[in-house]
Amino acid sequence: MRNRVNISGKWKALLLIVFLLPLFICNIVEYFTVPPENNRQETVTVKIEKGLALSQVADTLLFYHIIDNKNSFIYWAKILGYETRLKAGLFQVPKNLNELQVLRYLIKAPPKEIFVTLIEGWDNRQIANALAQKIGLNAQKFDSLCSDEAFIRRLGIDEPNLLGYLLPDTYAFLWGTSEEQAIRFLVGQTMALFKPDSVQAALKQLKMSVHDILTLASIVEGEAILDNERATIASVYYNRLNRGMRLQADPTIQFIVEGPPRRLLLKDLEIDSPYNTYKYKGLPPGPINNPGRLSILAALFPANTNYLYFVARGDGSHVFSRTAKEHARAKQQFDKVRRRVRLEKKKARKVN
Image 1 (cartoon, one colour):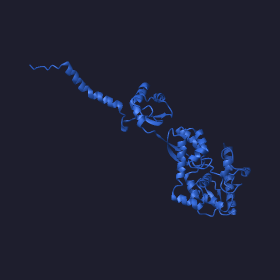
Image 2: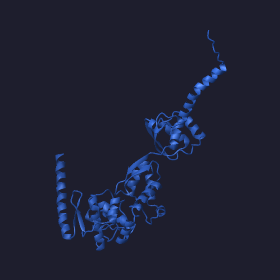
Image 3: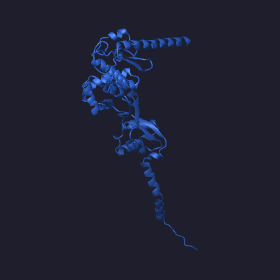
Image 4: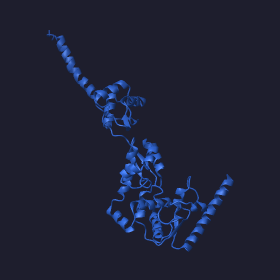
């Protein structure tokens, strides 16, 4: 008969501890560890507003069903010293994390970038509204800063307004970017265009300042639809400036006419304003919109032409002319197109 081994209670307890300890350690490690990226399945987009207290951040996470226990989240944040390290922004937070894992994720994860498209030719208010909608900044404060001369001087610009200096393009912003940060970034993008030696040489050759170029570029932006015509349109205005002719640029009249763009009337051309290029020679006092990169480059590197006039064809392109006689014929052709379009619209209304 075999001898039975008697295991004392202490040994049983020790064996149980040895058996359970690895499981216990694994559970602790799992609780404290954020799962790696490839193990994360679903995520929730969470917006943490600027200036929120820890309790409000916890309420936000509860609202998005990211955490179940607000007090646990606050406890871990305070005990680990993370209370002041939580960032504002937009985050893609994985589901099914515990409170500590959520906290550690928010501390380490970069905020999600938001792509914002700013359209060439927009004014400051339109840019402000687009950024307010996409990244949550204050549109009114943004617009106000654009005419704050003390702030503008700190940017190294000696002008009363930043119109023309906010380069439109598609950019990646962080949600919660401040108004000052956004303006500094956009102005920086504009000024970076003028740093290359070739651009500095062009400024000297043209005898134009950065402000002059942006002003002319904004007029080109207002006129051009086709990219391949921008440099030619710029050349027309340079040719007129060199001959002492008035620019007679319709976009500058649209700038001083109240309301949305419309067909200009003869009385509009008589408005007494320094922006009225039908009335006054030379460039207007400043840009009339925020021109895009291609219009700025067109103003810096205009085509070499003898054109003094241009008129729309009706399809987005223009007819360029060297003489007033050629221009008159081109205008007649465009008037025929305009009459035909009006007639077609009238017929369409009758049918409907």
